[in-house]
Image (cartoon, rainbow, N blue to C red; front, side, top):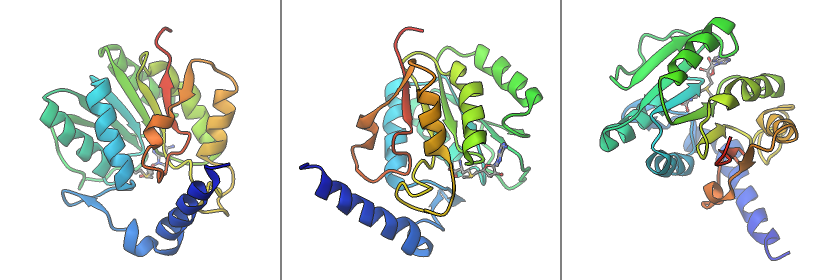
Length: 216
Ligand SMILES: C[S@@+](CC[C@H](N)C(=O)[O-])C[C@H]1O[C@@H](n2cnc3c(N)ncnc32)[C@H](O)[C@@H]1O
């Protein structure tokens, strides 16, 4: 009951930020000059997770311009630890070159891509996965089923953009990441959404910071 006004304010700000003032707030964000499709508050949460979990490898589906991978590579530089494998359908020669980033071109659900990713995962002890490619429900659910097994105990499976389809933005979108997460959590007990990752109230990944249980 006491929580509702806070949620109303947060949702109103979320819609203002994401839907109404997109050109001012989120369309042109860059990290060290590279476009990045993230809410800055979520990027801070990422920084805290990378430091706390200390993954040897981050697997990211959906590279776009490489801004999120470049951001994580910079954090890893400061930690002197960690690599990123990022996958996108599209090739883009302008993506940042960085020793810690490997780019894979292809669909995240292409069997050949999955074979390559699994081989890379097998070489690392601690793995964190971020799903940020095609946001339609069925694709995200397929990714959740294919990639969740790569996440090591107590690490995270982050599902991006659970805010679309009216949660609370882009109401017209249709079933998306939020609906995929709901279906996925109904079929597994190994993952649970971590509310601590939503401490800043505004997040594009509500319910999508999934922590894997300690014992698998
Ligand atoms: C939201 S953007 C990624 C944003 C990026 N992670 C960031 O934070 O800056 C989504 C990307 O997913 C890619 N994509 C769409 N469908 C895909 C698929 N089936 N497999 C891999 N990438 C895909 C698109 O080409 C696009 O670059």
